[in-house]
Image 1 (cartoon, rainbow, N blue to C red):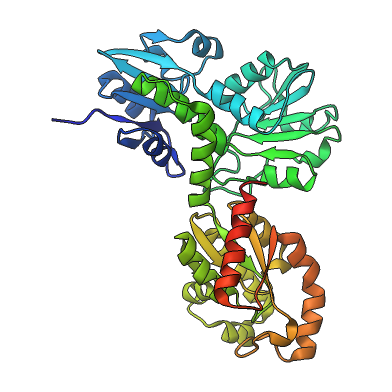
Image 2 (tube, rainbow, N blue to C red):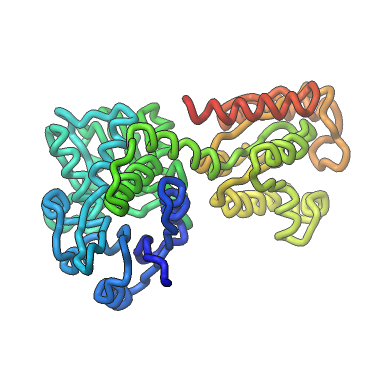
Length: 419
């Protein structure tokens, strides 16, 4: 007998965490069902061969005509992200509303009396607008690439210094096109918070820039989990303990998916600590220098000797940009990775950065192109210390037993999820 079909439809789903979330909170098998074209989406909806589905970009508005019954809140918003098939009739709901409201509340973002700027005009924009309006926002502005209708162009929105909250509802900055950003938070002196519905990576370039401004910044992962829990209630017809399940599942899955990046001086033990930490956390270990050698086909001393440090730093940045997009990794970096600010941002997007420390007198020097002696190392340490400090979330002492260092690293990793 064929199992009932539960899953997610959307244009591109390679970035999606929905399968692992749903299968964590419910007892059904959940499938990712990419439908690249409207013709494929139309055929899928006409067949109605599913028990229940979630809907993501670009079909949250497209699916509405196929629903026999649309929940009033979803109807008012104009977007459906959850559809349940009950005896051949399709019932449409919007759990993004409750999911986004949960995200805002979890980070203390209050819309009452605030000027809010929403980036994008798609289905999620309508949902966010409804939450902001219901939350008592004083003014809700919209910005888009085209500036059609009532929307401002992104360049025009940058001239609204009264904006206090920014919400990104576009896929800008989403895996695999990480690092992209539509506006610069520095242009908004009254800014208090930035929320981004993108959940992969955990911290988009927009959020990283917001953190640099010292404002509240939160990505869409908790929203994703929350809307999935609320969708699961519709899927199963059972009421769940959402107040307990959402934060617990969010933390557990972020813990599982997060990267941990290791930085520090050459010879401080980053690879040794990183490999042991990866084993302890059940994550894949990536030695960035080894990965550079694998991808270029040359060992690092030869790259330095034949092409110079500038060429090596270029290779390092290119390889790191790709590696850092992944998840569930411990990434041990070369000592000079922090010399390029873009590298530090790439490392921060999917998890914490730990700074492994060891006195300069105890640093290993064999086979390291720039570690030519104690004086050179002391000079290097003085230059890089501020960069390591700025790039890291926590420091880990590596002067004792390896197991003690790893335990300290584990505690530092755990702390980042409770901060």
